[in-house]
Length: 186
Image 1: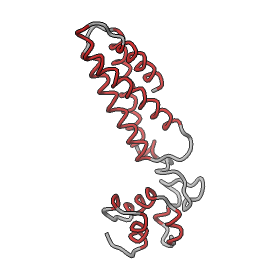
Image 2: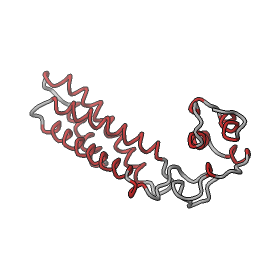
Image 3: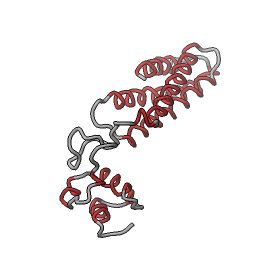
């Protein structure tokens, strides 16, 4: 992804200097998409390289956003024929999008997904316990309101969803705590 980011930045720079009147309008579009692509590839690479807690929804959202801009950048670059830097950018974007697709498949497979926590350790999860296989806060029957208050809103929403509660996206922290502790039904 860092390599693709570098190619996109080089393409954006070359596109910004484009002098061919027939290519200028498309070049402007490519500059923006190449810059977006370079930024998202860099962010995605940094998030995927982290060895600590893993938050699946955040990671998947970043990957999907990156794949979207990779496709858009490649599509725009392919519209301009006969320009080496656009061709190089399109190839790099297509290859990186393909590799991210493979990563998504691997993350979704049962073998690759085993042991990957769904979120970083929290105050209610013992350090080092896998959220996908070990002790889970939502499976504990005696989670106190104090323990729930120590959790952040995203953790509470995840717990509420696991309990089958609906409408959790719009709930505030106290509403989530009440819903999880049984004071309010879905």
